[in-house]
Amino acid sequence: MRRAIRATPINNEEETMAIFFDGRKDMTLAREKRGDKWYSMKKIEEHYVMIGEPRTFYLCHLTLERGTGSAIADSIHSAIEEMGISTAVNSGHRGGAIHLLELHTGRPLQ
Image (cartoon, rainbow, N blue to C red):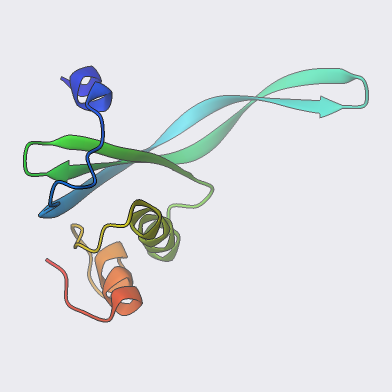
């Protein structure tokens, strides 16, 4: 199902009624160059996926250094602006992502 959603092309002409996001922390394999040598290391990253409704379509994937409400809200707000979408997202209270998105957009979100 996830591959099918991701393969669906984004149609910005279609009206987006809702945006949903979910995330998780993952150990990510990274490479770092020190001098002439490359070293492999693992680092913890926050990964978020955004989908749009109706008809469930993939919007984007976000990778964050920190998973704070402020960092999530800033990243989602930037992604929404880049895609030209002016709709709400899901979840939050006081310092959570939704509340901070409400502050960014200047209107209540559900």
